[in-house]
Length: 330
Image (cartoon, rainbow, N blue to C red; front, side, top):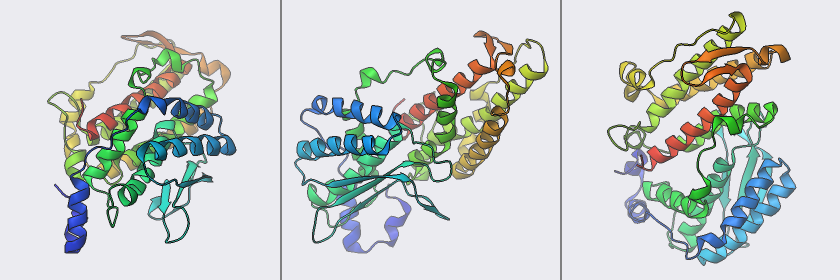
């Protein structure tokens, strides 16, 4: 089903839209050859150094465009994203009659100036490459955000990312990160969710992959409500000695709170506000308070620091679930 703006297009534009929508995949002949460049880019972004990230991004773009058989494109990595009342700009593709097409990417969020998650950065890069493909490989006269466009972006992503290395890390592995790194991860989650759902139709957001797995908007509602629960647990272990915690039933929440009837943008705004309050609260904890503990019914004794690791793991776990749901995968 076409997105809502399809009806406002001219007949000529609708023809282009339908052509774009009909193409769901862009194949790479030897994607494994490009994966070391993807790994190098992830390491560069983690370093938080713009020049290093610039070089790594250029390397991937150079070999990717060659593999796709499309003309080369200039790439420019900039610092904090520009923003206005409409939101934040994550990437930009421009092409002129003269000169090489250009992709601009921003590696930090606009408000918090935090480095974006690698998966978000890579998807943004591939999104802009998608526009380049539309014009130069598919020979479309315009590049519309169709469902086919987003599927092509995802097809490139899954070819470039070695799924065998994408198994979710355990929360214990997150616990090995410096606390500041875990804080940074929590600080960019709302932006990661916003990027994932941008441009998605209500039908896609409300579509469940199967009878047991959540739709994308249910995932967003879940992290919104779970955020409140995390803060309550922190407060409980600070004011009580080794309390035994009571866990909620997320599947029951999804039904009773009618997640599928929720507005996904409003749910994400609420999560963003709650996460901001959580970080302000957590940054006040003293060294002794980080060692205080509570009894988790399934995991045993967990300290406040352990719960910080659980939050980071929980964010990435549900970002992965969100991406799979948008693609119709359980």
